Length: 476
Image (cartoon, rainbow, N blue to C red; front, side, top):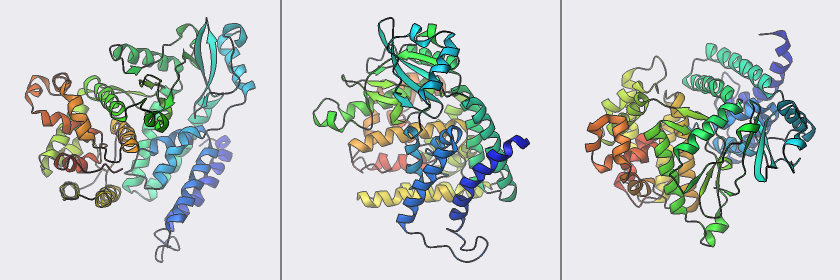
């Protein structure tokens, strides 16, 4: 490690070590001996808020990494999972003088000579970029500017985070530590792509072309003439965050059912048919306009997934639906979801537990929630590691579940997904399974999408439960 990184390492450890020690004392009063320290719910809520504050103060790399961890229920428990989710909109803005200087350097001209009415007040401030409104040739646009010096900061912080995690794993080779290292590796791979706005512009245009035949989904046009590696100019699209539609729904302007159907169909096209999907789906990136259309924003993280991975996931889900523990276990290994060195029989026992939980009869909402909590506890305690693409499947699943459950306490993804997938069944299975797939029963399609909508690691428990009980309220 370069000596110049030492002050930053000390600053990171100053924030993180007290939190880590606090979590260790949940299990050992004196770190190495003694019983656990009693922790009431209020303590966990307070510590979750403190954790979010400390991560925000560590800067953009840690904020972005925390956003990924917010979709990892196999690594992070509540209430910490929900607290991490709030980091999508808690990033302090960059001063306008620095943003203006960055624009002048990128365009090699005074920004006011390029665009009109450039607003110094940011429309949004993310972990990597900041967005301002303007007008260009009479059109309303948004100007997204990469945070000054953020690339060097992210590269340094990723290097230090990797050194910390590797040192911990060398001393404590636990599968949860390995899970954090997998997340860090995936973050390191994709965060560099996110900081290239020319790549993001290309992905935006690519997705806009793919969905040009979908009137319920809007994707902004790119102003290619003004786009640079650190500046992205897009068509301005007005809308309300997808998690803030209560007033519109109350007035009958937006149908929650139609909204979720559009989400499911759009992401089914991306994940199953095309293998190219928008992998950063949080409420700040999804708006709903006055006509009830979904506005999809931020294409910095677009993931390509090959047919072999999608096919392996598909086959694993089908095995779970058949209650075939052996084939489901094979699928876990094929997908790379098992920590190295884990005996096959141990994973088979986990699969048996999950399938047993899924097939229990539960008619009450609180009982369903208790079973869901048990599923998550089993997944947290067993050697599950979500690799690469499955992390992003889980993030998408969390979005669909969250939107559906927010506006309908009885939300059931299978009931909503089934009619949506009927018209897509042939093209999806033709891609995944070839011609043989077009002869699969209809229930396969509904089960597959519903399972994906439950998260790659959680689907094993949810799919059967939802197929057997159409009226069971959804739980998160």
